[in-house]
Image (tube, rainbow, N blue to C red; front, top):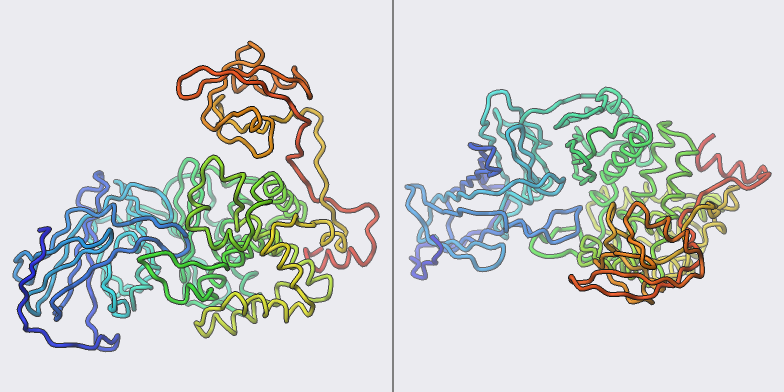
Length: 588
């Protein structure tokens, strides 16, 4: 009924909305035809007393800094009163439905949500399960976020089960104290594995949907070590129970943090060897967020604005420091050895050093611009921007090493942050964060911030690693082809990226050009590098390609191979002082 009644009876009284005396809004979520991927949602609002009800749907979810436009999946919106009489409404913004309420009454809103995206930040429904994220399903009215909410799950099959961090108040019925908690509490409903375990003296739960080669008992045992190792840094666990949700898919990867849970997506046959160790990094990352960014928040996240972006310069620390510790904590927990940790470190350094954008995009700006850049990459992104996850991780590494060389460490920052901001619920400002780190470090960090946070200076890895008996060196390989600056789509001869200041850029090549021949010989993805090696460094070759279905030719001068891989190795004959610092940092 997409019209708005402008004639409204003057039968309303002004009311003050307080959380103490508010009746809960009640949601019911049903899945009558799971194969349609449609969640059927019903919202019951008791005794609405003002002439207009503006229902908003979030545009994003905390922890994933991109406007997702969740309202685009909402359809079949209808509103009735307690007698099932239709009420008039109109849509006044992309995520706002304005309802005319002619007199005080109970209101029922029904709608459906299309749910066919398997990710940690959206919704997925099929014949085996339903996973949904609160921000992508539940609406709210501004000014009423502090009232309680109740969610009832209408089970389509008797053998389906419900898993959610919300407390259960009746069969398949759950209660959130306020809207933020509702948004922060994912649901996994259907056929899944569940494994309960204890860590740090508190109950934890693994909930796994999908099939794969994971050993859930082993996963739980290793997770307990991660939980307990992390808790030691903060002096305990700030929750009564914690849930780990995991969805298995062919090549999935992702994570999203919540106060009492995290949602993970991982490849179903990735639970052996090195791939399993990388899964533990993902677990450690999302669990570290229990404190960093969920409870220890930047000022901008002190109260979420679900209608628009919450900008902050602090993502380098919220995500970068978390990325640093997601590699360090499994090492401390004994889940892998020092060699694997240094391998991960070398991989991170290699990724940053082969990103031309590091010379143009500061970590400070990368944090602020996450909403428009990191999650919206294009073919030129590699040349003009840097990830606050990646560079933030490495800057936090250097910061920790600088502090450790003088007898302090980044570990000491976390208890201060927890006591000052986490336990009080007050968000920190950028100035407070940097000043606090500097005070704990005990020396002037202004030059460090100027070069590595605000500026684009190259990270001086060896300066900070040398006191620990480590060094970054180029990994030598003899079979690298000449450098072109072309990055191809996997398994194709279509250009994905053209790197800045490269022979390919000088030759006028563009992303999506389709390479056809090199010096008159047909090229294929499997033989591209062999063709380059045959021509040799310094050669100027004729390159034939299609652009927009038209045939073109240019000349390409092949350059010396660029260094693409760096490794972290011990120095020869480390001093006793270096070995002592290394052991204090990484263990024996």
